[in-house]
Length: 219
Image 1: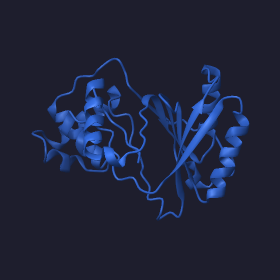
Image 2: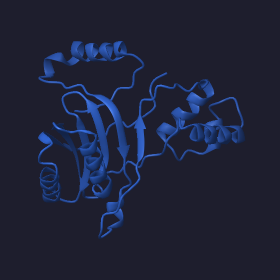
Image 3: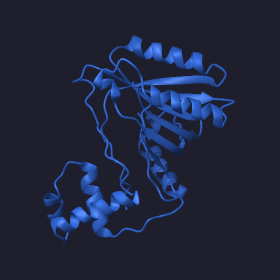
Image 4: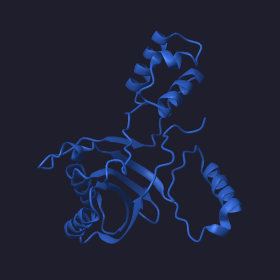
């Protein structure tokens, strides 16, 4: 099981982990905590069945030092969009004390300021008859030059849909979506060949289900 936490302080994370330990500690044999530095989602170009890989400009998410101030109405708008990014401004306006036009202006302002970075497509892999893998990598000699080369590799490979750089046990995390397990193994062989001097170890997980996907932290 893998999950992400949004928190303003390290103490909040500690409290969540302590709560999990109290409730499920006897069922957890091992746990790993990583601190996300930056991540990038890539367009799912493999759906277009391109014959050649091209560089995709994904969208980046990371923790910024500058904190933008938003009010309660903005929070409610963001919360609604996080549940369904296709919800109409009329439906959103039913939950806030402003008009639909004002909601639309606020959404544009949130997008312009960078608070809303993008909207993500979540697929049902089973219905598409494909497999979703998450790969965790331990690296060494992974300097800025190697990291940029690895990130460029991810941007160019259409089956890699996500890249994460962390501080912790597993420094790099990537997601792959493929039709067959052999396709996954082929990609991993290529990665190990291209970055043989940098990858110490990797661990792969087959993602069976995504129960919750919400980038909006609790206020």
